[in-house]
Length: 76
Length: 380
Image (cartoon, rainbow over all chains, first blue to last red; front, side, top):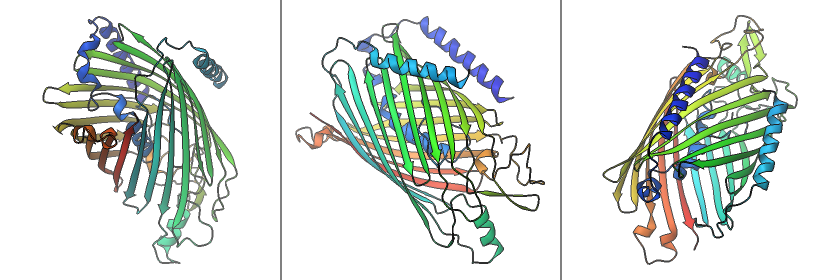
């Protein structure tokens, strides 16, 4: 399968996820204790993910996946 | 969308970030945190990279915060190891991805420094990045805006950045690339949802429009019976979509799954699947196991060998990253929050220590090891 149709298909799935999420009952703040644990939260690994993206960019042909451009360097 | 329109949108985003009214909150909830880490990277080509970096987060009043990041890297590329005068040595020199002027039989060492700062206020943030090394200076200005929905169970973040790189190739005996530029326009839209009391979901799309020099200015490619400087197209459109799910498990553990699909107009399509399993060993001490699988197709102009000096459509590459490739990464990490071990020690209990080991290898007979260790300190 060509890459562009794949991307469009995945975007459609993501939009469906967003629409599906709107149909559920919001989780109350006092129910979120486990979600702020460092082994669960997205925030706790954000800097590590950015470092890893840079490492992979220098050794593979793609980029992305962490929601930011990352900075330029001669290693790319 | 034209670059001019994109730049206008970016400027509007940055202006709104500075002008947006802050939340009524007067005091910051988050503590001030400073962290530092050391990272060692070594690979099967005997290239080594030592990184020393620091991060600071200063929460400010009125729901604003400043963050600062610094990184110093020392890169060592080993000397050509083949005996001087042999065909192996000649091939190694002509296809080298680093400058060689005079003596190719000594190690090449370079330093890179990067600084990044961000100011966030309420739902908006602006950031600036600069990276400097002897032959390459990169800068980037970015902004993002986010909004909560559904009683803070969902968050939509929109981001954009513009990067401009100045390339001034060093003296190289077998190439003659002049000064050049590269620009990158980036957009992203990322949604994060609290799906249940134990499940977080994040998904998004990203787009990069890259213009300018995108090949290695020091590398030659063997084509049509001779050596020709590498030549890539000047423009590249890169896009990806990703989804991540973080599931808290009952026995003080978590499972993180991720998938990313990438495609560009050079013909590279890639898939990435990641898994992370974390578990508390005891209170304050957690262990993590990680596995990542990656595969990609080749760029349309990539060939193992070129029959003509014109390559494919005028482009030639010696960059294996543009060929078919698959890779695996295995990792293990330990993280210790010292508050659990020394709750009465005023200084020690504010620290978190961690160490991370990784083993990476790909289908190009390439492998690498990464060791990372760091400490975070939460200020009173």
